[in-house]
Image 1 (cartoon, rainbow, N blue to C red):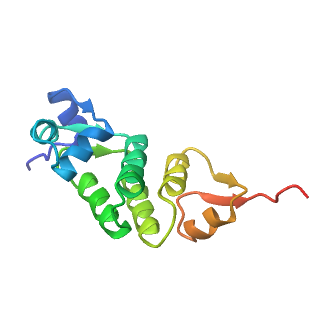
Image 2 (image 1 turned 60 degrees about the horizontal axis):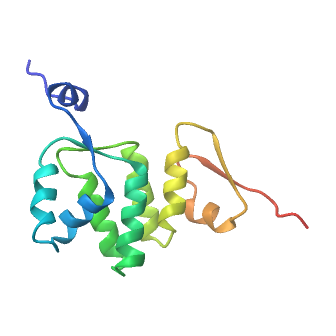
Image 3 (image 1 turned 45 degrees about the horizontal axis):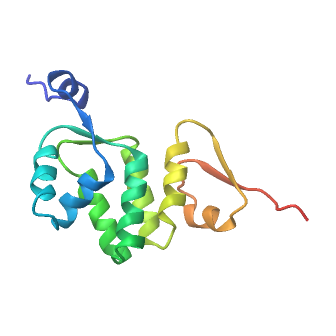
Length: 148
């Protein structure tokens, strides 16, 4: 029986680096003749992409670069599908991408992802977050009443 290397095994065999948003952006956009090849090299080895980096990446792509939502969703999936990329709470991140494609705010959905597995309830005054999260939210969303 052969053993398939796990992420933990890969981390022990080779040092892993966490990557910043700008490395992912250069890799996705291919728009910088100096930084793009470096980003390609870094992403050919095991790396960690934090939830905060994914949150910022979605914001940069949509808000700063004005890339349409469906394309941003595909770009985010492309990142988490990379062979050597490790993302915390990947199933919840995929859920957040699906909600984002349906019109939810990317950062709001990533707040819920970050809370998942740590707490049973995410509290907010924002009714839209609860509506956008829907029934399949990885954490129950509680909408608090605003003070009269």
